[in-house]
Image (cartoon, rainbow, N blue to C red; front, top):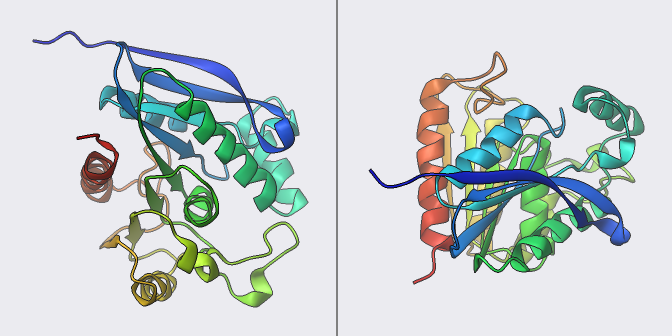
Length: 249
């Protein structure tokens, strides 16, 4: 058997407006070069489950970075930070995109990166991944996992989240994979259909897959919504997608 090892740690990176924030990074223990993946965590926060996701990507040969998008809240736990964010009206898009761009730039400065970077997000992070793929630089592929609010109605917009990402689809810069549960309500199957229509309209490269007997958060192994059939197939599709678009030839 070949030798396997990985390295993981908390690092600092420059995010929105040059703020110094925490991020968790995991990578194979070697010289590479490896593709990079930015993980955008869900609204419950920068938690253990998402750090495990980073290590899973490292096991599969990627350098994964998970920026703490709730870092400025300064509370003791992810749950407390999440509650503070919710009370304030959600994550502000400009700050979130600044932090995600900082994570992309951090990966691109690493000597063992192969020059390719993907972005993946879950729940609210799925919406933010879609937004990032339409507005940020340096993204080669994106995965949107049940991103609620991509197709937000005008009355659902707020000063913190002033645009529906679907309205920026014409600016999408990379191939997009979307994974959904048929029982989800945000995004609902109708929301996913609207998003797919926008991608078709603008001739974007994409794939959508919707799972039966699955709703929101079906990837979340630590939550009741976990669905093994959807998560197992979903992971296979994620690795195939990034394998196709992030590997150098």
